[in-house]
Length: 386
Image (cartoon, rainbow, N blue to C red; front, side, top):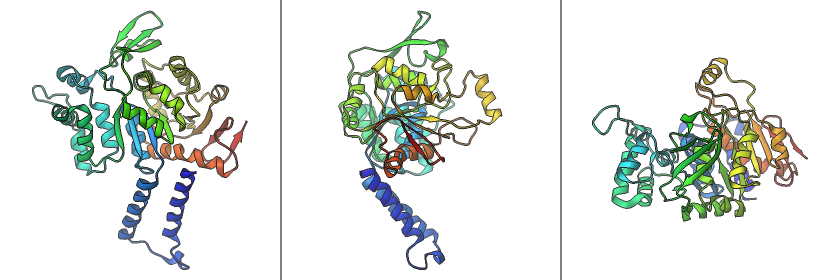
């Protein structure tokens, strides 16, 4: 009901913009008024937006957060901490700290700061002894960690960047991913797993004695919507869900639980897997019935030049496979989710809109989104209860 009221309030705000009086059709909005309404709109979102907890890592989670922050400031991002490659891996090894890269990306995604400052925090050194390859934002978090500890570093960076919401590590334990492949080979380290280019039979965390970060667990339990993905199935999604206490908190939460499937397969992780295969892998590792809804891409066509580039790299579009998903007992939201650029990525605004829209559209039509399966295709304006 709160989300319905939230969107209704935004609708009222929108109507008041174009219908301030009987002569609304003759009203001209000036840039100053536009800025005022944008500020009021964002303030309404900040104060009344739904409590959303997003779980993942890599660029996928940061992309989703950029879209969601337009609808709510009541956001919690739970980030995996198994990265052992690049700048993050070097800092992790040399300073014995948790890898900062994914944390940095999420902080910047939720930041309300000048574009120049964001650009500086993303800057990567290309030369300099000991600096080459390091990201400035990572070094900033490393310096803060030495001063305040990792938890304090995130809090301090959040203040500097005027972050809306909370960015939380899934655990404070220093973890490694271990993948057992179907050929019997066992590979240690997140950065090494995709290089094996085989089919993963099982993933585990080492050591196995870790536990979910208490603030992250509370964010899951307090959420109205829990969103998992998009992101690398094994090295971002399962790297979070395998932390003891995470999947239990999701199941016990009263939130609506949404899985966002990737739009492309990932070489060395999900070669040839459909959307239903992605979900089955998750269920094989942490048990079934974790999600109410799965969001999949059904874009009719990817530009041929872009598609050929991905195919050359061993990546292909993830087949929605809605028939199998339906048999797995989840609600399906299928839409064109692609962002129009040179890379095949989710469109953050469209994706964020769908995360909220599914909880209102079907109530208005008298169909409960969570009493039986439904399918929804954006733009067709219909839901089908089954």
